[in-house]
Image 1 (cartoon, rainbow, N blue to C red):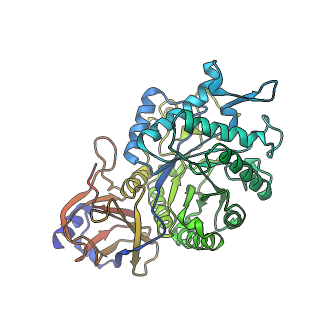
Image 2 (tube, rainbow, N blue to C red):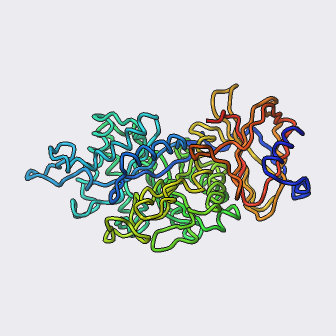
Length: 494
């Protein structure tokens, strides 16, 4: 494969001397399947409560999401958005039954997101932030699960949003911000909701997902809830998830992969059926560097794109079925609802997004452009779509290096994708080989390196090279600069 090697060296701008760097041998085994079919990489897309999108910004957002092609969306709202209280007879007054457009506004905003998902057959995790205290006085008030089930029945059966495949009752119920009392109370709430779903014929159509807890290797409570709910709620939950905002060290040393693999195993031991059900990291991001309560300025940096690619790669290697990026746009959420000036300032928005649609208004027009981590997340989403079979990938011992591979499409005509992440501050040389791989494939190569991440005229990732005749069985030798990502795929460029 000398032809490929020369193209790669030229594309990366490396001298031949770089070949003296550490060599990492990567072997792809398509006969070994890791976990169940991948659901893809997801994105959190909520209503813009405080700073709605203009029509032009909406068009820009949907265009970017069409490029990203997320495997699924997570959309949270709450009973206050669709229930306007109770009438004198104690019956709920639903927003979609009201004649006042202002009362129907929040349902219409949700419907716009669901319209996007439905048109593209993108699965949606819909959910509520927490119990609507104020509408009800107690979390176990039976009126709340009734409200939830009525709203889901309305959206699926009357509006036709069959894209709603999962329902998440309480966001991060192990955190006091969720207003959930404790594990026992959460479990009772889940059981109440399951009864209401079954009564409306939703039980098989919409999977209740949980426990949706927040944690990390330093705060293992999230994983304890996963084990307990597998034991206690297996007849209510038919999809499983947790949130993990990782410290840098957890990504760099491979803790993400190690712990997720362990938890997948323990989940299967507690509930064997769970291994054939969805198993997701339903919120992901990096915790180091967080400021002002809930802002992550590192999303603006090149390194965030490398680290999140590493994170997603470890999720796939661990046999989990997907990871979801928190989140789409800074302007979706505010840090403090008491601080919502007409034009947001530097402390207003939760800075976690792929971009900030309020950038121009804030005098920072550059913020409206996609940030670096959109580059890696969108490429991985496109190259590892829902239905991908993650296959065995092994490599010679190398610190801060990850590789994974996936096959998508119909048997006999499967598309191959491989992601390589070098999270070390030194250059490497990768030798990639698969004894059962294609012998004459067109491979598109994408670079994500500091100063070398090609963009097209539309601002989306552009191939660094397209090689017409690649023999995976002979192998490829690829120079890989420090701190970066290579993505190789037989999927045609956009």
